[in-house]
Image (cartoon, rainbow, N blue to C red):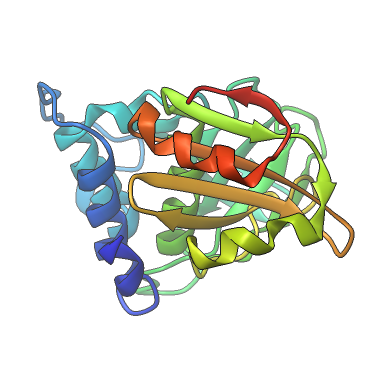
Amino acid sequence: MDWVDHLETDPIRALESFVLGWFPAEEAEPTGKESTAGEPDDLPEALAAFHRLARLRPAVHRFRNPVLKQPRRASGPLGGRLVFAVDGDGTRDWSIPWPPQELGEVDPRVWLTEDPFLANPETIIEEEPLSRFLLQYTLYEAMNAALYQAWTYCMPTARLAPLWSMLRPVPLSPFLPAETAEKFFVAPGLLTRISSDENEAAVVFAALHRATLTSLLEHGFRWSRFDG
């Protein structure tokens, strides 16, 4: 879990440490030079770092909601943009202003565009800048892709109390705040996201190994899915 220590000061390093530690090594993909945005050096460092990682851990290019191997240019209500990730159903995408709005901008804001193929799609500015957003996005998709998962039914928020001694919070804003607004937590070999308010909460766990989920049984949660 040491990657969490780097998040505030060096989010790209945190992303690299998480990806290399969570996803297993496999045969690397061939290195390519193509990019719809120009040469690879034109990309912001965080996005370039993600693609370098993908050559070491190709699994990050197989997300249910993929980060595009070749970002594509588009336009929208806020101007030109570079789309770097898309919802698997095509109902939303994520982009950065393109060309950059500020000269030398190294960590641009991220735009979430709903129904991007409509004439006037809705665009929302994400809370996190690109470097932190890419880690947030990767955590979410790593959980979606995990072989071993456990999902609780909705329960009183007070039932979460025993978890705080075992989970370490990831200092990121809630993901998809207009929908589930899930916050991330980690423990050895375990990723967790929690959607909650003052009254109710639901929890999703994802593990590298089936046995990691077994200890969760002692909390007596009701499970809609449990792979332990």
